[in-house]
Image 1 (tube, rainbow, N blue to C red):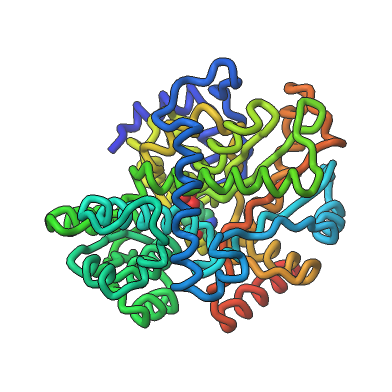
Image 2 (cartoon, rainbow, N blue to C red; image 1 turned 135 degrees about the horizontal axis):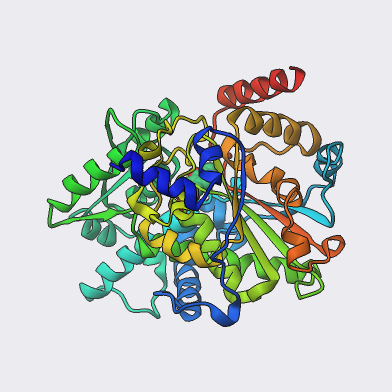
Length: 442
Ligand SMILES: *Cc1c(COP(=O)(O)O)cnc(C)c1O
């Protein structure tokens, strides 16, 4: 815990913390951002991201066989980049206006997991499975990885266990892929995890253990139980390098899509990316990747709920993952699954601290309004968390960020990273939408 004196000293050093503690929506610009020339050496390099992309390619034949819905894309899991012009028109009824082009990166439509966790979560399990198979001498890099669907492989993996702590989406991704490979998999869920997610996991043969506390407590319990078993591997959302690396590949794929769409990113044409942030792994991984590709011409912003500003609190105070939102009197209660996180990832936050341009916060009511507006304008359904990036351009336009950095905003490309939605059942969708419609009517 932090003493009152300590918190007072944070407040003097960073007055914005007062507004954060008062649960006001804020925009924070990162004073510690480094330009490409001054970027420190990170534990991960561009080459690591490229070898991660190669792992995905090796596993493509596995996906084609194990998940036939991926066959059309030859086993490569990717989502479309859509221009959302009608949504831009609706948002631009309010000031400041969005300048430049406005896109949605539709990870809500990623195959199998229906969320961005299909990048990080799947990657970590595939990486582990490949390593086990290499070490056992049953696999060579040149083999056709369709062999991962064989009974021999499934029997081999059935000796091993995988554990994960999750509020929902990470558990879904780890559970689905691990069970498919034949692992014994246990998901430790927090009290706020939705019933349909638990039911879906159980239907896939995943063991679900329900805990009374929040996400951090689910991770703690899962980590202790899993690590006590020598045959078990824990996917650790608060520390994992592999999760992070899986997310970085999203940046390589996005760069390819931008190139195919003839969208230029250079000093005259800035790229802005807005990512919903929980522990900071997925937004940090994509930001890391984008910085490797575009350097100072990409501007990455994260967004957190006003009730769960975990990464913001870590960066504003400089305490990183040592501090939780509860330490400053915030309750970590939000409807935004995946963002209901009180304490940030240690690994991801240290990386993001140097490359994120800023973080803003958003109220839950606003997420539902955006959900309904996107449905009405573009006929795209997102889960509440995934809508948080939609107000990014306008939140940043309220600051002096563009002026300070001499950016030509009329040439900007804005990308809102939509992080999940496709697995949400119809009844839930309807409830979310109706809540949004009634918020809009108020
Ligand atoms: C997990 C998740 C995020 C945030 O990812 P972190 O790695 O926890 O920062 C955002 N949106 C959705 C829908 C998620 O499931």
